[in-house]
Picture 1 (cartoon, rainbow, N blue to C red):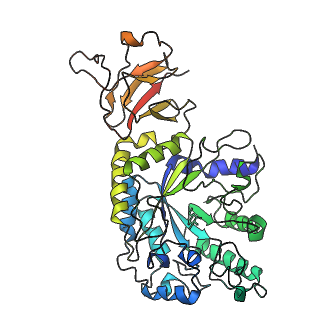
Picture 2: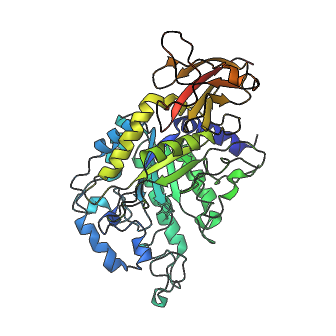
Length: 445
Ligand code: GLC
């Protein structure tokens, strides 16, 4: 096995078990409250944007509350924006004065985040934007995304990109040196010719591996929105990343490398339509959709990194809290069908999805069936079954109307108390209409 792949597989063991994480986008952009790209979208100058620092009071910022919510939701890791494209640092960087410790709150947000989430036993990661719209040596005029991309007076002739890279490396070194053991570094993002060697990515990853060898990184030092980089190659580059990071979508078949081997990946998804807080955006997904999204990711061998965007005060919007609490209720009953699970190696069933952990197959029944639920091709392979939410027995069905479909195994939820043998009925309500999970203990082959 290729050394890069071998080391990636070892590093991501905890990550492939964790399956569910919290993404947190917070920064100055929560004050204008029109999403984290507003400087670029509205082509705001620094003079128009920088004064927001004077309002960054973080009145209600309580990372312990964030951590409690993540834990309640069943999230096993969390990634906070240490610095987004606007260049504002949520930590006490010695390389800039554009930082939270220079704002009215005077707090090192990153340090408090790390302490609070570690205290809840949640693994911690930092998002770091390799794009920096504030740094004078970052390309401005003609760049694909820079807020001043359409301003000829912001020409790049005197910009020294080497200086910018020294700044970028220096900040990453600060985060990997001064904040203890991190579990994830989430870089964002490569585009056009701004990728790989342009960032001195190989040298950067060497530095990262020397400082924190266990740390896992995403694929965006090399990958852009259209192209995930070499992480799927048989011989990926050293900066191809430890996991792929599809965004706002779930790969139809999960993500495999050129040889057909699963690679670690996470779908990063927002709860509404924005990463950073947007006061107007009330288009939130339901907890039903989030639960089924998480099951879909795991069924395809991946993770779900679900985003919250705290408001200017540091509060996670109540709509997000409610959704995560509902998801947590489902996870409290069913999490063993998520943690440590992955591909089942079976075709997707009509009634829902499968996840699997060794000889434990999890049937996620999401659609009521006519008659018994069919485990296709599983005749003779089932040792026993349990309803995950309460560990109650689920018996195989052997009604006369199933006899000619003998290559399959069947079960139904409608158990008749006295006789022990459920009656043959044509329909019954699912115990959990969002996703009823049956644990199928497979016979040793
Ligand atoms: C996109 C957005 C960026 C966000 C990231 C999260 O790159 O542009 O704002 O942080 O997705 O995956």
